Image (cartoon, rainbow, N blue to C red; front, top):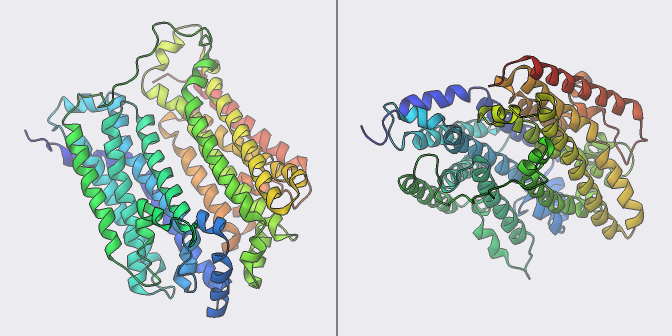
Length: 533
């Protein structure tokens, strides 16, 4: 038997398990790029309007740090792909990371790979199958991204280069995740290591791109995201930077295979830290255990929100300049947030995007219930005095309370940054903080959907992620595509008052809270009546 025996069967198994998740990822990413290109062509129909936008954007380092280099914004392709460029790169990296870790370290942690390995399966079959699925998904995504925008007036060579760049991002972080999966025993830690590399790549790229002539622009060359952006698909096209991602993929893949051959099944190369022989006095409740499981994740999310909200708050005071004299751009921003000042419209829209990110944490925290059940750790816990409802509520409380913390941090930091730029900290902090906290009922609705899915149909608990992706697309693209109101109303975020533009109306917020309670109660009732495991 060779080390790759059984790889084909595992590839088919992985594709069957991901038959819903991966197509949903691909559809969302392709739709985002298509809508951005189509919308930009309508907002900036002339070369003069695009050049004017490029001049204005290039004078704002905070905007460049958030959205990427602004070197080719005078072209339709450069301007159309500038804003979604970094966002798509991050999402593609996360998709690739989750795919690889799910089929390697997560399966190993749950004991599934040990069971599979007892058959005619080679040592490296699981790793190979995971990489084949991740790489193949990125190949399909690359082709569809290119096809989706080819007919919109963009140069063919630029479209191909852009799509290859996005594919390179996916390949790189799939390989990085494969290495991380060999180093540690926990899938959460493997994902955390990969996300840490992604965050560092984003910060290096942001620092290099926004440094200006007096700063260190070479920092962008230390970032895998920066390598891809150096291709400049719609400017002075350079193909050779794509060799850097290729080299990283080869090195990381070889390293992953070598590391996989040097460790035992279910073990990582980095030794796991031994816990104390006796539990701390505070670990006497289900909530204390849930807090211990979620605390480092919540800390990482909080740090990320501090950086993100600081950048958004800094940008808010200059969003009127970014719109320039483009009547279409001003109308779009006003549709997103109201008919008053563009800065307030931007704050309202930004906080809705921050709320989507907060919802990702809430869903992750709520679905930790399913991970604990799948790992067969729940039976031992429920054999004690802890009942099912108390155990489920302990994690759901973390999801709800953590969302309050994250949106509170986002509103506070964003308000301080915006107030510092405008010279009115005392006035802006409560306004931005209110704009953030008013999103909470919508976040709780999605978290409750996750709890309901876990309690009623645990096999399909991941449908909560599908709901989040749907709401993201409606929030991000709905106003731009001028979708019908009934479709916009599908998202709970549509019903949130657009503070600081509109007056606070309590009725829709109470309705959202009622919906969240209904989903949560349904999930708890379902959990109480079904079998565990």
